[in-house]
Image 1 (cartoon, rainbow, N blue to C red):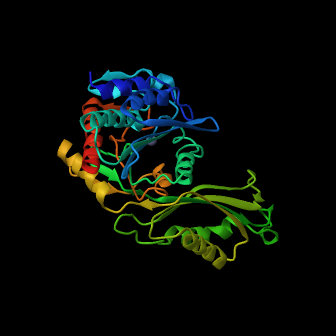
Image 2 (tube, rainbow, N blue to C red; image 1 turned 90 degrees about the vertical axis):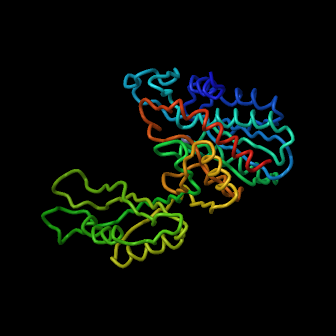
Image 3 (cartoon, rainbow, N blue to C red; image 1 turned 30 degrees about the vertical axis):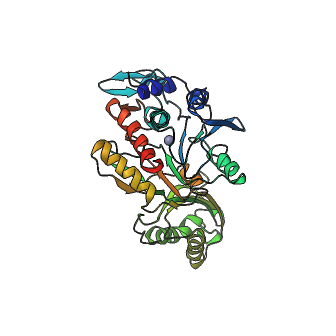
Length: 375
Ligand SMILES: [Zn+2]
């Protein structure tokens, strides 16, 4: 049996629903220490993180990922139990099979093969593993990055093992992610009897033209790497529940997915300008869950694209679509960050799986990336 497949199955069997690690990282330490990695567990508020490094020279190539998985959803809907790795029809089923225990296993086995074949390789290899990616992400990668920064550890390249491929292994690398910024807008009116509108002020009526303008606004054109910034309403709540009451206020939740063509300050200013133009009485609370990051085409993306092409024949595409990831924290301390992993069609779903035929090639792509950068 393939070593990567065997390790993936071992990890899936550990039911590490976020923020639990359930021993995944101690298993990785058992494998990494004999290879010369110095392993350090960094705990924070019930979250277990692992920082492992082999070597002291630069460049430092880091492999990053998470051992936690999202909850299973209704167990009876799974064809086989989510924490019993099960192969059917050429696929390996289990929670975390795609997001992202196969990537973790592939990275570790790739490091083992690389170190054994090239004990005198240049530079260093690191692992940054957390059990808090699928949850609030406040005690995981961000904590380790802060600790590394404080001690002056210089990262040169980082590969995050998120499932980025879409149809076949290797078709997509993420070289950046959009930022995410939310707003909670409360538009104030005057509550009253619906039969006496002259004595009230309807905040739903008042905010409607402003919302229409926000929806129609073109925030930017995107750029070479990014789609244009988008603005979306996620919730609107107004009304007392009665059909004869004009509500006193309406609350609107919205979110920007923004690219590097816009700035936080610029977007906030433009939203306020539109609300002010419509003469609304309002309160607006902003929260930023991630700034955009971008790794332009360069040494790391070239090393990875070349590894993919040599291993699979697939010509890979650089993409910045999708949600936020821990790459946003690593990008603050590492100039080149890319994400690459298996197809993501089944992630977070019932019957999550990976095609078994992709498992060893994934490991080989990570190993070839090490060869391209550290030999
Ligand atoms: Zn993930």
